[in-house]
Image (cartoon, rainbow, N blue to C red):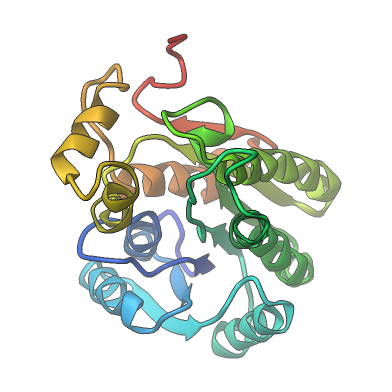
Length: 266
């Protein structure tokens, strides 16, 4: 049986992870690889992708890696050229780079604001800027950008730059989808909610609960109507649908993957 992404070439930005387990990028690489895509995995650190490479190959996928700061225009241009040199084309782009910083409109420093906008939003802009012309050459493609429910609603802490940048990703995706629809390039957004990824334990617990992982997990689960947290595989399966031919009539929209949290009015 033909796999859903057979022989497609997929650039996955943010394919590494801060620790063991299923981060969004790692899961996306493994699941896309399982479905036949050739994975061009990108991260700031090569060592962060070691487990991603192992998981993708274990799933039967082909994968190559590239290190890149996706907030730097020249590096992103070089990254796309490297993918073309390796595989000859780009059919799929997943923009998964991002991170959060605590602080509201007064408390957050200007430098922290700029860094968040660069990391979460500029990275999406630059990748699309350099990948879309390559997709046009092969007659189309599919782009999935990763936002967050923080871009839709208050999620328990003041992180104004993160929330603003993630909201902007949604609108960036809609505008780009309409602009390039006639070129057969579809652009959609996955909006994860309270996911249990390695970043929760390695970074967020220190930021929000003084390092108490269990306290953080309990506070997050309490917001979710389904009563449990998803992980990177849930994000990846949503992205898989959006880049597959099954979603050929889906562009300029979002899939919210949050266990019903956004639907709650409290």
